Length: 131
Image 1 (cartoon, rainbow, N blue to C red):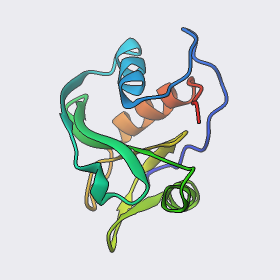
Image 2 (image 1 turned 90 degrees about the horizontal axis):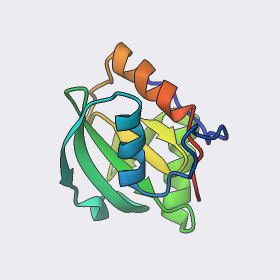
Image 3 (image 1 turned 135 degrees about the vertical axis):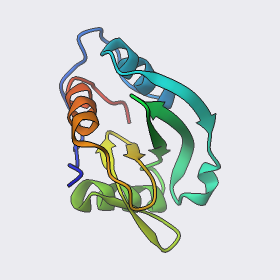
Image 4 (image 1 turned 90 degrees about the vertical axis):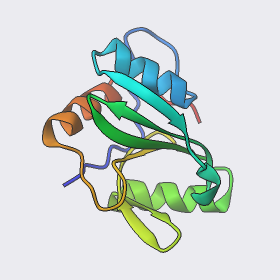
């Protein structure tokens, strides 16, 4: 089962807050996760998202969205993602991991492999996220 990682309050050893998807990807690289093939996504199809991309993390295709908690759709998406481990694209319910205002998913019905999930969760536990 995909674990929901709530808002994390432990500071990253290198300092600074994660504000953008690029900040998050940089943190993954610093911790030895292979990041490759970043592609912009049409995040407008995800209610409440203000940025999105597809990227390979350790060879697994992952979609990352930054949700905007200042609007109602973004707050609803974050609440569902944090409490239920899912977020919505239209009528579809997709398994996810959350961290700050970010949602990470392997897509429609797919799951993170256990090893990648543990690695990502370990990195996320070290980060401090900006609003």
